[in-house]
View 1 (cartoon, one colour):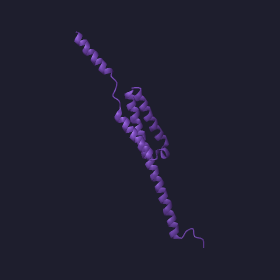
View 2 (tube, helix red, strand yellow):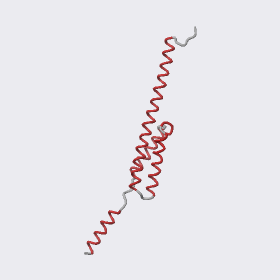
View 3 (tube, rainbow, N blue to C red):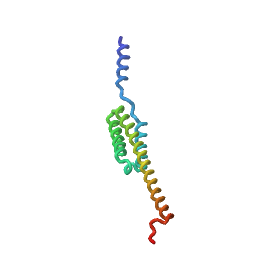
View 4 (cartoon, helix red, strand yellow):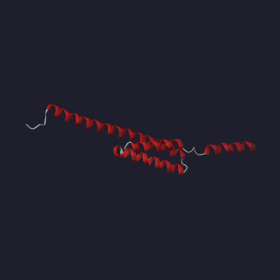
Length: 119
């Protein structure tokens, strides 16, 4: 009987144990936010970049509070937001490059066709 009580107590304590520290998620979120910063997300996707940074900070705070399940979720969301910011930054940079090439092509076309010359 006593043995059954001890085993039951151990099972109960095991069920109450907190989730492990989300170290991998923290690393992924931190790396994604750093890549977003390098991609110029603060300029090209400021809202998503800010949300990614805030999610990373929230995840860190939740880890400190031993809220590991909530921290894992916050860090995963932060990583996704950072990836979105990277994609938006890359798209904005490509749009700017296309616009610059279109302007350059239009100028060359005018130059070759002699448009804009004063007689």
